[in-house]
Image 1 (spheres, rainbow, N blue to C red):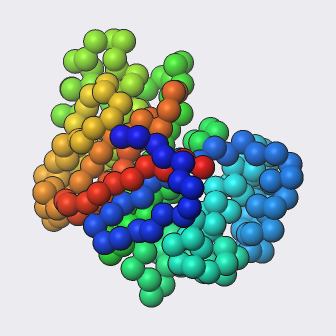
Image 2: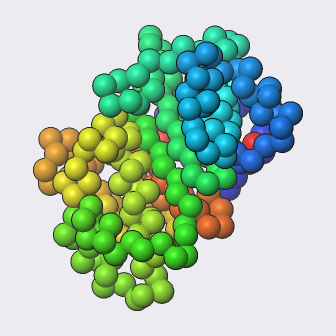
Length: 239
């Protein structure tokens, strides 16, 4: 994979997936401009954050989402109208454009495709993160066994790889954390990027109808995306 800095806004075709990597740390001037892009409900939501950094991250991520969608839809960012399913996943009414976003610490990832469901996740990898109890509680038995069989120095990265893959998949399905994370299994490895195996023993959906891939967003981050299709061309962009 290679992150590109496009000179012009790229065109999204059938069978293609676009993934964007965007830094969330912005100047005060940029924050003011981003806030203007948001609608009143989004501005009110940002105002409710008790931590300024969290409010700024939300504003930047939502404003960038609007700007990217405006590029694909050829409309003004403020004219993008979001719908939301019962689990909170955003979508566009009467449009084949599918999207998802995730942000952690100072970085956001966005994914776009036509006519196929998509999900994406990014996580900041904390070296002091106590992941043992989380894995034991939320991972499937196969995942936990695979994780704790790895060398100690590989387990932290493997945990975050597994977590982002699982998050990307349930976000693609549109159910978020309303889906039990131990009802399915993904491949457990400390390698930061590459195609991942997916096992859905308790799901009516066919594992072969999904594609799951770990990606490397940069140092100290793990990422993954899922799409409800097998054949696609992915392009990675940075802003």
